[in-house]
Amino acid sequence: MLRAFYIGRFQPYHFGHHAVITRIAEEVDELVIGIGSAQKSHEATDPFTAGERVLMLYNALEHLPIRHYVVPIEDVRYNSIWVHHVASRTPRFDVVYSNNPLVIQLFREAGFCVKESPLYVRERYSGTEIRRRMIAGEKWEHLVPKPVAEVIKSFDGVVRLKNVSTSDSDFSL
Image (tube, rainbow, N blue to C red; front, side, top):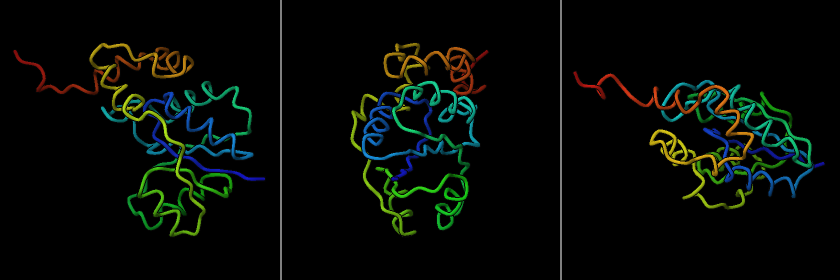
């Protein structure tokens, strides 16, 4: 049985992530999905909590045809121990999928087999672009699976993002 690991911040989970995960699922028997920077929320680049992101993935992947585990993983400030930190918080895995050069380097140095993630349309499907659209009041729902949009709307995530993306210097009297 082959179990893979894939990590992302999922701020928010979008169709680019979905395409990568669906493709990985075709190659392995089980998939461990790490929610990176799990301690971060209520910030312009990280507006959603780990629990909200778990719910996004749970709902979006409900019909994924393989067993999968979604595990929040907090950041550590020491890259040399990061892989051990990840491994101590997840089920055992055999292969890592990533396109992040640092993630690839760290896992390879730790002796893991690493494969580059399947590519997707990065310029269209990016959390940065989706958050920008949310703040600007532009359409964004078509860039995420419907269950993800529903989760975000359930806790007024767009309002939160707009609020945490402004500062008191944005207002004049």
